[in-house]
Image (cartoon, rainbow, N blue to C red):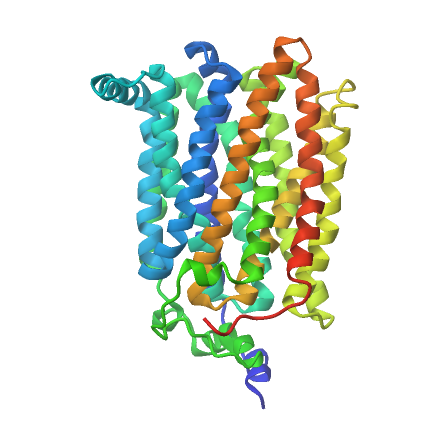
Length: 461
């Protein structure tokens, strides 16, 4: 009996799903921490007198540092290993989240240094929040490269997009919990306490990670049958996974592959859409419909609940094609084309928005759901084609491209909203941004398919 048959004929165990659960909760905390600012933005903007461009600069600071850090985080994770990397990442981002509570202190310190060096001072609140966002971004950049690497370590290829969809849905849970918890905490104890309490949650997860995670070959809770199942499709492909062969590779080597560029372009075009929804929706509802912070709870909870369906369903969809005989990449690309069509409904958000605020909320919810389905699959294209030792590095390169795309979207949004808002035509600015968000996925898919028309695993690294 073949190895492939044996791993299906015997009880293989389910410990890999415990690891998936840990990644799910890490991603939940990741998005909970990063969304606190956007939910408090309408109130903080009034308190500190921020313009849309000021807020865009603060969020762009996060995205820029996140982008650059992703590049190095992936490489760093491949070198030190998944367990140590996650410990470091969540420690840094939890401290960064807590730092927001002391943004004024940090802003004054930065301005004192800038004045001493003869540099122009930035408003204290903006400087303080920018440095806090930068530290948050530095730590959070480790989450997805480490999670994708852990998924590649603990799951066979046919299950990876489903596992990625599950842990990636933690982003949606975080986005649902945030509009429920943040206004309540802020109303009870103030905005500073909100950053401290939410930021401290990461340290609880840290204990569980230290106890339950080890490399599969060192994991005592993992059965021999489950370990064989995890690795069986590497053998079926006739490729020996060279994760631990000691052979080094450079970023420049990775950039020589079209697969790297396809992933990076797909992330560049689409990550900014999610950033835009995450950071600007509360301000959109406040500006367009006059909603207050406490009124965001239900519509945002509904919207991000919708995205859970997209994340898990989108992660499952390629298995339908793979089970019919498609190679993993081919099945994923078929699923991603179907997913790329869905965000086109966002084009109707502004034209039909006069009916009710629920119209844009539902239509944007469909677009955001499609993004999460897309995200579950685009990440997995990397582990389909690259050896495990290079997965985090390639994810980091794509993450940097996605972060830079996010900076571009955020800065463009801030400029458009200030420009059209000054003319009393703010809705025009949102119409333009929604159009960009709607079309991004089809453009990304077309370029990705052109760069990598057929499935080809990389075995020469």
